[in-house]
Length: 270
Length: 247
Ligand SMILES: Nc1ncnc2c1ncn2[C@@H]1O[C@H](COP(=O)(O)OP(=O)(O)O)[C@@H](O)[C@H]1O
Ligand SMILES: [Mg+2]
Image (cartoon, rainbow over all chains, first blue to last red; front, side, top):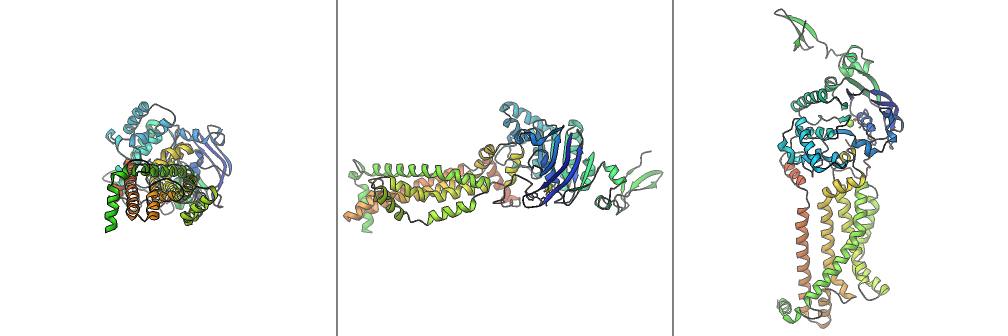
């Protein structure tokens, strides 16, 4: 479990990126931080692995204040996946995946063997192991990024807009892949996005953030749709525009669900 | 044209290739002085440049100091140190070190700065210690530019090391100064040609090295970029990147 207690972050230039945040992130579930650009999502995420230290307040992992843990040790135990994959351009795919195990002192042979298995896990062909990141497509690079994040079998996986830079078709593929992986692995995933649809698709818990690092609502997607906390949330999720309003119509004796534009969304199971 | 014939005659004369003060001996001395200077100047400039490029701090003073050093006339500095320290190698070595520091410093900090901040950030987020970030990420990726700095410093050192002979009995400059004094222009020009050839050969070696040190994956990036990619954003210079993201 990850817990934010009264966390505020003010950068040296005076920007308040996160303001007095309390959140509880349950274990083995996916929590999505969603909000427009500059709302403090990345800052919040990076406080978990101490890439950013809070100005005040505490971040706890399983009851331990991360401020008391050596940042390097902490980071080596937490998976981190970012938008541009952040792969080391001068290292082959296999060495990128094995980076952290090697830093931890694992033998090269063991780290490489495990890295190959991870390529399978994220749905990459093993023949890519000897390629360099620049020789891969954007989607493949992101998969390598995920494999690297999983390399030390971390309990916690932090993902900062990992699918933000790939085209919509590949993004949909990667989202499904993540859902499958999560079902298999059951990590505590903290996922950042500005896309509310992605948040609702992936999140067991969705945390909606506003400018200035304020939390508007933290709840399950269903709860947010049923009871948006305020006008901002209602607007953000599109509830007030009827964007998410679905209707049931009868077609040849079956009840078909259609969206606001009349497009069929599915069939109502009785 | 006659002068060149004299120079080639001097170069071809077997008497100039053996014994004390021969061409091979002077070349060896020239290389030795240049090597000593390069090692000393690198020991001073490369760590400082690396630190500046790594931290993004102290760039302005580094630029100012190397600009100031660049403006110093080497012959003046040499004369000054010569009068102060006396005849011998110390004065030319110091003067040449001063000459070599600016390009070495510039190459080092430009090399370290050139590394994509997001790559460095990711390395840190994975749990690399600062020294590991330097050794495993910044150094290999910045190496071609660092070597470029060493290359231009070396070229300047070799060309200017002729001045060592002004104050010490060392190097290919001896031929130039002796020729000047005895009006043996064949010897003088022959000496100059040797300096130029030496500089070209060494520079060629560095040109090769500079290509070899480009990491394979980066070479792949370059071709991929030529094909399709948008250029990477310029590195953010002077902004510490220990906190927040770099969007
Ligand atoms: N290192 C930094 N220095 C100063 N301001 C920063 C830094 N990092 C982020 N910020 C600012 O903090 C706010 C929140 O940023 P961020 O957490 O990156 O938002 P998001 O990820 O939601 O787009 C923004 O206004 C941003 O400009
Ligand atoms: Mg962000």
